[in-house]
Structures are given as structure tokens and as C-alpha cells.
Image (tube, rainbow over all chains, first blue to last red; front, side, top):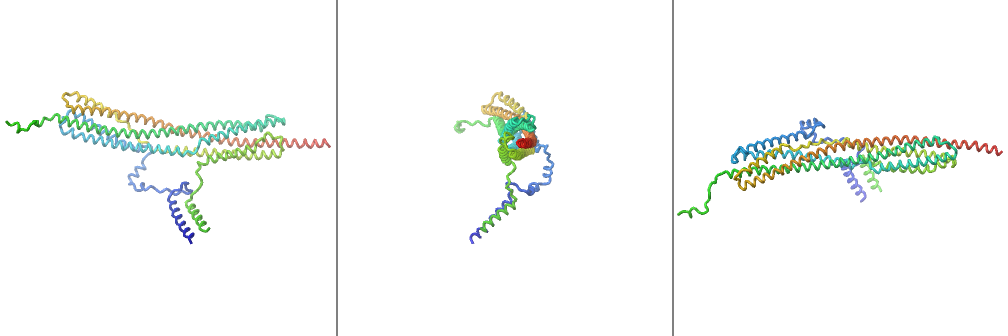
Length: 279
Length: 238
């Protein structure tokens, strides 16, 4: 009775397992791969967005629009900044205008830096993507140098054997007074010539293989450097934004200070009570 | 017993339903092909050891059998070498396809720092210098001017660092492009070299078959010369 229950339980578990496996792609692949379902995001997108994606050309920079916006924000900020600094000398420090304009210019700078940081974050994620792809490509290389070396050694052995055969055949033919022009000897000579050429080819193959691995290492190195440069640039932009914030804060403080210095003294407090001064 | 059979049947049918193939990917084929190649070579070597030396000294029928065996081993060896080269060729071709199809998304442009920012800093430096020259500045004003002045070199250094990174990035991109092109070229050369090896292998195979034919002819010719000589000697004895 017990084995029957166990069998039923096992059957149920296996059915659940098989159902779960059907939802998961097999690591070995499938003989008849099912059609990949369309991504939901594609269907959920509005028509205009889909149209833009279809129209996107590989030759076109997909980040061009964002970069353009960042440049426009930068130009706007610089224009506001230059105008403010030009007016600062002509306007008095106590007027309302300069003090009110500083936050506006600072906000324009903040907007520009936000856009720039956002853009550089994309740069960084792109660099990371490239690096991952390069690393992935390099870990899945199928041809090992050892296999090519073994192939080269094999040809060397073959060549040695053919030379040995030639010597032995020549001495055997000599023993029966056969001529050196025997076609078997000539064929062996041709084989040896082919083998010598093949040996050179295997050596060239090994050399070229090493070259290709050097190029792969270089590509990986450049991908790492690109990612590092993207990170450094992002940090520099963040630092620059902090410096400009400090610049505007200091400017506002300086104006406030200059205005305070220009105000007449409102009242000089006597050191003693007026009552005490009464005669 | 019955439950065990039932379990096996269920496992088998679930695997069949998922169409799981337990064939390893083609990449792992190369070491196997190389091992088979070494085996084929050893068999050929063992079969032909001393064949040429004993060509005219050993009994002709035994030599002819050895020639035939050697011929078969030579065919098997060259076929196996072709398989090995094809497996390497296939793997390299797949890698090349992957590098070529490596459709990297277009890199975002790397903006250089705006040179107008440096102009702004220079202007500000001049303005601060003018203000500092004014007479009657309070201690607080002098201190605030000094702080503002200390910010400017930091900003200038930041912009210079950005410019250096920009130059390095451009350089890096150029090197990377060059390395990618060189890699594709290198793979193409490798493929060509392996194709040349395959052609040579086929040439060699044909030459070895010719060689064994010539050896057989040599032995057969020796046999036919020996048979009339033996007959004339027996006639002379009579």
C-alpha cells in the first residue's frame, strides 16, 4: 500500500517539476525553439513612441537630443551668468535686482548640471554594458591555444615519420638495385614538401592566434578604461556643480556684506543707561 | 519494481516533452576531435612501423596485407585531421561572427568642457582683483573675497581635468576601434590559414594513397620476378 502512495506522490511532484521546466528555457536549447513572445513594453507603448523607435537609424546618435538639451541649458546658464556679472558692477549691492537674480542663475546652473549628470550616467551605463559584453565574449572563447599547439606537434611528428620512411625506403630500394627515381620515393618527397609547408602554416596559425588574443586583451583594456573615464567624468561634473554652488553662495554673501557695509549706522547704543546720564 | 518502472517512464516522458537534448554544444568538440586525431595517428604509426624496411625481406602476402592496413589507417588519420581542423574552423568562424555581430549600441558623444567657462573664470578673477584693490574694505569683506578667489583655481583645475579626460577618451576610442578592426582581420587570417591546412591535408591524403599503391606495385613486381626465377631454377635442377 505504502509504495503505491509513494508512487502517486512522486508522480504529482514530477508533474509539477515538468510544468515548471516547461516555463524555463532548457540550458541545452531546444530542437524546435518556440517563437519568442513579444515584449509587453512594445505593445503597451503609445503609437508615437513606437514610431520613433522604428524610425531610429543605427547611424543616428540616440543621445543627440539629450545632449542638445544639455548644451542649450549650458548656454542659457552661461548667458544668465555673464549678464549678472556684467550688471553687478553697475548696480549697487543694496538694490533688489542682483540679490533676486542670483538664485535664478544658480537654478539655471543646477538645471544644466542635472541634465549633464543624467547624460553622463547614461554614458557610464553604456560603458559598463560594453565592458560586460567584451568580458562575456572573452569567457566564451572555444579555441584553446593548447589544441593548436597539439596540432602543430602532430604535423612535426608526421614530418619526422615521413622522413624516416623515406630513408628506410631508399635503403630498401638500394638493396634490390632499384633506381632512386622510383615513383614511391618521389611521392614521399612530395608528401614531405607538403608537410613542411603544413608545418609552416601551423606555426603561422599559432602566431596569428596569439595576435588575436592580444587584440582581445587590448579591447578589454580599452573597455575598462572607457568605464573608468566615464565614472571619473561623472565625479568631475558633480564636483564642478558643488564648486559653482559655493561660488553663488559666496557671491550672495558678499553682496549682502557689501550692502550691510554701505548702510548708515542706525543707532549707536550708549554704553550706559540714559537714566544714568540724566543730570 | 512496478513503481520504479512507472517513475522511469514519467521522468522519460517529461524529458521528451521538454525536448531536452543531452548533446553538448559544438565548442566542446575540439578536444575530443584532437584526442581522436592522436589515436588515429598512433594506430597508423603502429601499423606501419618498419614497413619500408621489410618491404622486400618479409613474405610478400604479409607485406601486402600491411600495406592495405596502412592505407586504411592513413585514410582514417587524414579524415580525422580534417574533422579536427573543421571543428577549429567552425569555432573560430562562430567567434568571428559574434565579434562582427557585436552590434554595440552607438556610444553617447563625450562633450568637451565649454571653453566659455574658462573665460567666465578669468573675468571673475579680474573682478575680484578690482574689488580687492578698493580701499576701506572690512575684514569680513576681505575674507569673503579671499574665499571667492580660492574657488576659482579649483574650478579651473576641474575644467582642465575634464579636458584631459576628454582627450584621453578620444584617444581610447580610436585605439579601441583599431583593436576591433585588427581582431576581425586576425580572425580572417586565422580562418584562411586553417582552410589552407585543410586543402593541404586533402592533398596529402591523395599522395599517401598513391604512395601505398606504388608500394603495392613494387611488392607485386618483386613477387612476379621471384616466381619465374624460382620456376627456372627448378627446371635447371631437373
